[in-house]
Image 1 (cartoon, chains in turn green, blue):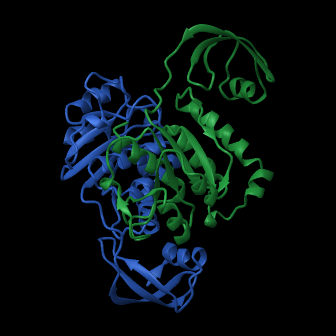
Image 2 (image 1 turned 120 degrees about the vertical axis):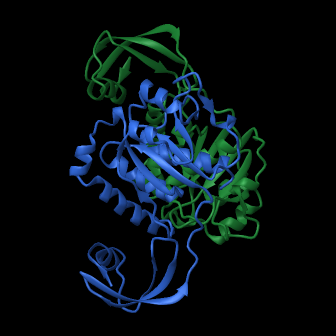
Image 3 (image 1 turned 45 degrees about the horizontal axis):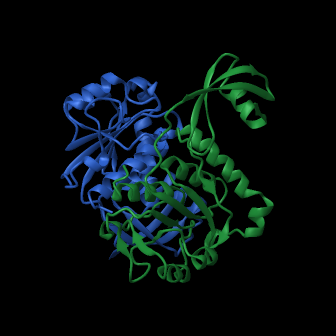
Length: 229
Length: 229
């Protein structure tokens, strides 16, 4: 039985009626055919079949996108796009230039909203695995605890001495990776210094990318580097 | 002297006043410092200095993005993003599933609008070269005339027999390249057949990418493949 949001999505947005065949997924990689039995506005009853269908293959590497919290709906877009690109998890990071506090994110239940966006993006792009949107953390905490797997931070070419172009990175795919993408104003010199202890500082050159496009640009670049595409 | 759009952008959006130092570029790769002499709503007078400044380096490969015309502002986003990513030119393509005609694009002066978007995106991302938005053409015409340089068409994995993953392409950078990205409903089998004669059919896997994100995804992937990033 599907209720509320899901039911409304089916009946109002997709205009599904009784008898239709749909696909349902359990969020952990399995996807099944199902038949709609009754379709009301608040409730849709379905019969889930035994036939499993093949969802989009998951990436061979579990990438956590450590995305600095962006303003307004730009963060929503970054979450949506990271799911489309195949990230395994999204770690919202309160950076110094994020212009937001953890308390205000909690008050606005931002994590829950982003998780709903992740569910809907997974559906759109045919992924049967819904990436987790982790609890937002301060930048220092994420770096202090230690990022998951090999870590990479996207920075401007002259942000620090140790910055290397993407092409200089080894092409071997690590088992897991974290990719840090910055806020509208970029990472501060202190954040870059701090990250340099645990992450590779990587640049994509002198062109300025919009902050809300960086998740797509970076994930596409790293998946290409690692021959995942 | 700057007029109309440019003047309004400076005075209203950026709130520039007399005495401010700005950067101006000639659209062909040169960028200079300039000082604002008078700043009115309809007209801004500037004195262009002799000091050239270093704009973002252009990509070493001239990529023409052959983008199927998308609906509404999605095409605007694709043009904006292609400029940000470093495309050298944008060829709007009327694909079978574009749901638009050349005549309606002409009537709406779409090419001019996209060219203005290219100018504004070049400014935002620090490029001193403004990519040309070419005259929109039917798909068959673009393929018939022959695409510029090595050509690549992004397709679904099972769209045709000859489809190869990006990782199977040679990593050597051609001098020039054309990258074909499809409309919302994808290329038709006939279009793919037709393109296969002049272009490599390339896939990025089984996840479904939004049509308006494909320009960024593809340009990021190809620039990484060619070690331009």
